[in-house]
Amino acid sequence: MKPFRFQQFDIQQNADVFRVGTDAVLLGSLANVFEAKKVLEVGTGTGIISLMIAQRNPEAQILAIDINSEAVNISQTNFINSPFFDRIKSQLQDLKNFDTEEKFDLIISNPPYFEINSSEKDILARQRLELNFSDLVKKSSQLLSENGLFTVIIPIGSEKEFNQICFNNNLFLQRKVSIKGIKTSEPKRLVLEYSFTKSETVIENFVIEKSPRVYSDEYLELTKDFHQFNKKLL
Image (cartoon, rainbow, N blue to C red; front, top):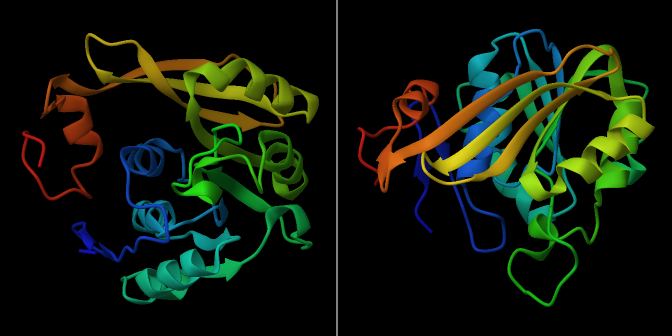
């Protein structure tokens, strides 16, 4: 499988690990990463989100974990071959059993969001088989530093459930970015940021394409330091 090339790093891919997708690029680009010195990515896959964070924040030390050994192998290869190899590492780890005294300033995840079903495609990455929302939120609340951020991208239909789980774990919504695929469509994804501090939620809207197969100006601006393309989709 051909690597996915960004401006400062390449992403090697294979059929056993969830490939580079728009959700990961959006999360890696939109997340507030600038105050984070210690970062934990849960379910790293190819490592794209961690690499984007490393590029955006030169001070960040990043631990990327995954339950899939193939993902750990390929992400570690991508990390080693990047300019950020000394600040980022991959580890085979189930979040539910992750035992550490360390606290993280940013915990970030593109979690499995489908209910368990009969599909055989990317089961661990797509279905809540090994990691459900409750486990993700509960453990993240234990590992998050006092002023840290917990950031995810989820389908818009899961917002109410996810917010309630976070509230039950003393995590409060700080920022919500509603994402439309095309300007005329309904939002399908949300980037959500939580912390232990209660405050008014910042609401933002984001459009990926202004017309079919033509990126919006805001998407081009957001990803200008990563993607290698012009306004038309490749």
